[in-house]
Image 1: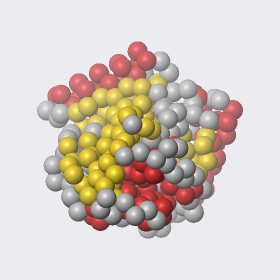
Image 2: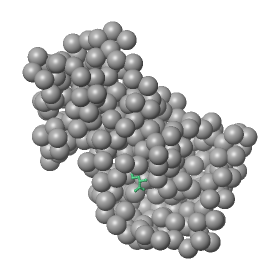
Image 3: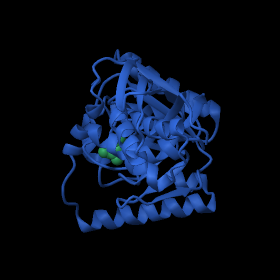
Image 4: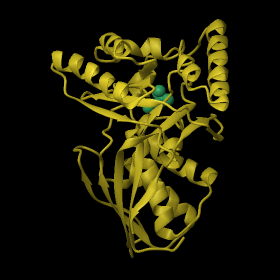
Length: 309
Ligand code: HSE
């Protein structure tokens, strides 16, 4: 890659956990996409020039997800120059569709692209996770890996990423305009789980991975069950039972909480049904007077990318 003076990159929103794989599965969405503009500076280090689209995020690079990921890449590359960031927040914090991961992935990918450095996935991922950790307090890669690399990713706690063949699903993601912090949604989880639940979850995840490899998209959807995390988090989600009933009545075959919520994701097998699911959930939220955004699309093969050089 050629080094540049300025560049614009984007990284996608993501759905983590996919119900069956708490902290180890995640997929990239086609939209929303988060944009980051990067400009090379003579002064070493990271400067945040502006954060557009959302108020209240830290301008101090060491406390900002994008800033921290950018600092880690600059340090790893050992360059003498610095970078100024203009962050366009399109994936909103506390949405459950990988806001911090989109920021961390776009910054890590963007600084490497600005430098013309071809970092390998296993080199880039931990640098992006340095940013993600600021927001969630943990180094789970289930949002960051698909935000960086696209597709459907299986991530192990020791940092290995396996790309799974993505099931041919249509996805409806609905984001009610309320905030659930990941740290808050992690605090409600039990520290220990019964052996029978661990065994059940292991078998379900194994079955899901098998279905991805055999290309059985319907059976992969039916494998999406969780006895470990989701039951503890449902009480935090706005109107989850009504949303689930509306989605299933409109033709969803499976779904659940996206990441730690409040967004939810629902699976169907054609675009018309995916849109109908969005409308049915919209009706629930409109009745409750709750603003929300609906995103309909497929699993995106592409993760972080250059959009303007
Ligand atoms: N796996 C993480 C969690 C994702 O569920 O806490 C957070 O978006």
